[in-house]
Every structure is written in C-alpha cells, then in structure tokens.
Amino acid sequence: MDHTTPARDDADPFGTVAPEPDETMGPPEPAAAAPSARSMTLSIATLVAAVLFAVLAVMPAPYVVSSPGPTRDTLGDQGGTPLIAITGAPTYPSTGQLRLTTVSATGGPGYPSTALGVVRGWFDGSSAVRPVEELYPPDASKDQVDKANQVQMTSSQENATVAALEELGYDVPATLTVAGTTAGSGAAGVLLVGDILVAMDGTALTSFTQLTDVLKATAAGATVHLGLDRAGSPIDVDVVTSERKGGGAQLGVLINPTFFPPVDVKIKIDDIGGPSAGTMFALGIIDKLTPEDEVNGQVVAGTGTMDISGEVGPIGGIRQKLVGARRDGATWFLAPTGDCPEVVGHVPDGLRVVRIATLHEAREAITAIGAGTADSLPTCTAG
Image 1 (cartoon, rainbow, N blue to C red):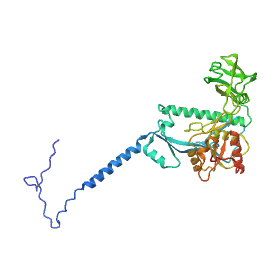
Image 2 (cartoon, rainbow, N blue to C red; image 1 turned 135 degrees about the horizontal axis):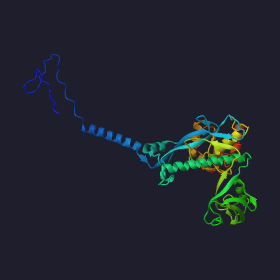
Image 3 (cartoon, rainbow, N blue to C red; image 1 turned 90 degrees about the vertical axis):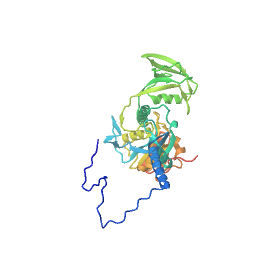
C-alpha cells in the first residue's frame, strides 16, 4: 500500500525541512560511541549462557531424584475421612500420632527429572540421585509403574489388616488357592494353578498363618500329604518339601489367599503407592482396636513392609523418610532391621530410631514410647 505524506508549508523543493532558528539551542550532542568488540562478545556470550541455562533447566535428565515426601498420621484423617475406618468391633481414640513416611521422586516414567533438579539434588544432603536404569526397566511406562505401585499398596493394606488382627488374637480364615509353582520344586508338576489347599497330613488348613506355622515345624526334605480341592473335586497328592530360608520347609508353591477377616477394616489414602506403609497401617489398626492409648501423645513415624505373618521388611529411601519424619514433628522413628546400614550416621537431630523386625516388636516399641520407658529399646548401630 502506498503511503503519502501531507505537504508542509515550510517544505523546500527537495523535500527537506529547514529548522527554525532557536537562540536557546546549544551545540549538537556528540554521537554515541559504537560498542567495542569486547563488550559485544561479552553480551552475546551472556545471552547464549542464559539460553543454555534455560534449556538445561527443563531438559529431561536420565536420573531419579528422591527427596523427603509427605507423611500421614494413620490415626488421623484425610479430607475429613479417617485413613483407617473399622466396623464390627469397638474402637478407641488416641492422643498420639503414628505417621507413615514417603519419598517424593522424579525421574520415573511420566515424571522426568530436569538437569537443574538433578544438580540441586546432588547438593541437597536430604536428596538422593541415582541413574534411572537402576530403578526402572527401560521399557516401563507411566501406567505400568502407577499400576504396580497401586497393587503393592493394596496388598500392603491387606497384609497389615491380617497381621494386625492376628497380633490381637483374632482368627482370620482364608481360602488358599495355588497361583503357581516354583520350577524344580516338589510341587512342580504335582500342584496345578487353581488348586485349593484343604489339608496337610490330615489337619485341615483354615488360614494362611496356620499353613506357614505347620511348614516352619516341618523338616526340609520331608514328604507331606496334601488334601486339595481341584475344580470342585477332592484329590490327595504327596509333595517333597525343600528348605525354607530362615528354617523349616517350603512347598515350592505360590499361594493367592482370599481372606475373610472377622472385623471390617478399610484404609483410604490418596496419591501414595508402594508397599512400605504396611507396618504403620498395622500399628494404626492395633491402636484403634485396643483401649490402651499406646502412643500417649507422642509423635512416632516409621516405615517397613508387612507380610501376613507379621514380618517387617526393608524399604528404599530410608534417609529421605527420616528427614521427612523429623520435619513433620516426629521424635521417634521405627526402622526395619534390614535398613539399619542406611540409617547409621543419617539420623536428624531430635529424632530417635528404634530397630524392629516384627509387628510384635513394633507394637511393644510404641507402647514403651507412650509409657516413657523406651530408653532401652534397640536401635541401629554401626557394624
């Protein structure tokens, strides 16, 4: 589009405009000096560095950065809903807290770490940085990881419920269904997926704990006589046992138990996955079902997996969990025996650690803490 300029009365024939005389006008200002080559180079270098830093700040990095995550009181509620709700038995209030601990992590599928976050993690004493391949399979997807974490959380809640009820003396009946066998074991080729264990050596099997107790008392290499329900029909088979780690015998069979608890326990917690809250869930159930105020105003945090028989297992991220526990007011921490090597030398000021291997030990520990008699409880030591 053409652009026209209005004619001016003072325009000369050549298109220039003569300035009006001005007695106040001083001499013309000197022209600004052109920037030197050095200052231009420095400006360009600064700009490039800023762009590179901005790119690095958001660029994914192949590392997992683990930091202290939130804690939750298993005796409390979340959004007005109790974390542990129990029906079918009397429950009792508590004046203390039993806090499960978590780790917040970036770097897994769907949650990439940035280069800046990795650098920050290296310099943060409460964080840990590890190559992503050490923690996740190369082809794992976000959905797969999230689903696995949720399955582990659900299993830990079921295990915690059974272990807690049996610690309190309840019988928890179960149907013992075969989910698979171990290659090379006495059960391989003898037991089939879907078989239901009904009896062993003439004794009816009514609970998972009963099965494990019988096997603990059986010599490795012994032949046991199993009564089965196979597709609705009774059948008897003989299985040669093998040695169980920790003593006793094992069948070499994977059991998928279906439990029928005499007390209804519902655990509701959002945005947390994995199995490591099992011990604190179990302690929360015990505290609610007993009239004693075990914790008695104390803030006790902890971690550890929980199996059906009440064994406490080690977990990952114990150092980050110690920091998170102290941050949220805990003065005591229950740590699995298997994590003690990671605990020594990394306990925050103001936090005391108690070593536990079983749910029974954990129950005794919180009772002693609440009673003010915990000074002699075992702790993690070097060596």
